[in-house]
Amino acid sequence: VQLVESGGGLVQAGGSLRLSCAASGSTFSSYDMGWFRQAPGKEREFVAAISWNGISTDLTDSVKGRFTISRANAKNTVYLQMNSLKPEDTAIYYCAANTRGWSTRRRGAEYDYWGQGTQVTVSS
Image 1 (cartoon, rainbow, N blue to C red):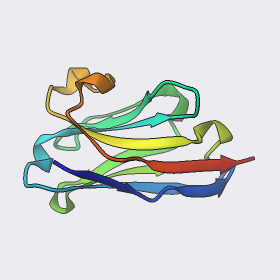
Image 2: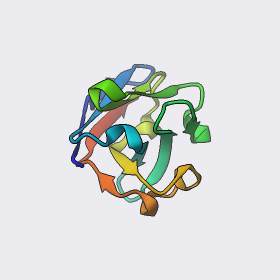
Image 3: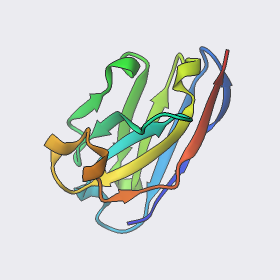
Image 4: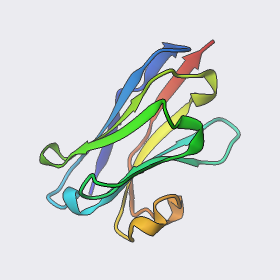
């Protein structure tokens, strides 16, 4: 599975961006999908996850109420809608695919496939 993120960029605080992650292959709909981010000098952190069928979602506390994760299996794509962006959201955002079950959704080491990342920069 190959994952390609898009939609990053520079935005002012309070603005919005929608990240997309397009997957190759016919097995996308069987994967739970996650978004992670890594800011300079910091460890990679979990942002959001969505189950293979889109029924379950999970968001880290710092983005709840601002970010939404969704997917379109017919398009092999997962999205991260980011509203009310803050400078502390600045990071490289990665999407990833997980075949190891929903209970592992917050652990990056459990994900099998990763995209190359897209930069999100929020200016104050």
